[in-house]
Length: 354
Image (cartoon, rainbow, N blue to C red):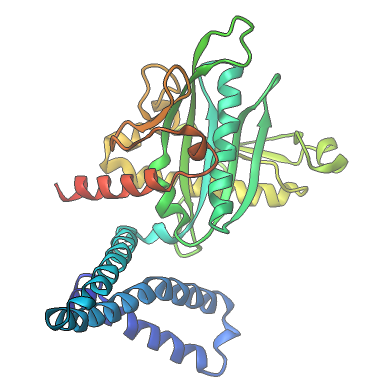
């Protein structure tokens, strides 16, 4: 199937796979751990990309044979239609993966969630989103780590950060950055009135060591230590192990409290800050995306809402950018966000090409 070798560059991927396998077979390959690990990761990504292409190419050859059979024998038409349907689905998956072409798309993702306007309702909404992304990752068998979680006084969270590690985690989640709005009957309103709540989501890639951002840690970054809250044991709660970093030139803030060691929390917080600054710089070419970060974006009415979740009086979830809409919010809140992620990727590709 020629399209697999040209549009998706199967030949180049196969050649690179052979090259890496040869390098791995050489004596002393593991002597340089960092280089070896990068090649192993690259090989894993190549296999994820090339295997579907190879299956698609093989299926296309089968399709050509079935077309010849169907022309001579009508009993082969049903099998032809079934094969065509299966290949169409495979092609959609391959096209979707081809959209994840940026270097950072294959990275793990930091997902930071912050409650906005709406008081306790917004804190509760932030926790609902926190759970939604964790469930999405678990359904994909991705590793989920709670980097930071600050409880609200009555219910929910003020903010929280997840580290989601899995193939192309950042690539799939990058379109989630922005304000998410919830409309429902408030469980915290004794009068049973409808409330609108906001929470901001910020997704950044966990960058590898090969991408470095120059930061003057002494001059441009303020470090605050504080006592970790929530689960973590007596040691965590009795020492100032949690770290908050503020990048003074743009007021970007990250924090980490999941580790007992202040040193480990500082290391991870620095990694998060580098990732965020890298992403901000990258998105400067797109004012709409860049405005969704830091103090530039208001988390509430008047801010840029990327998705609306309506639980009353109607029930639906609708993306404000792509127009994708589903009528049952609960599966979405339980982690079923793939249709929205895929719709965004196709929408963003169309904008790039326009």
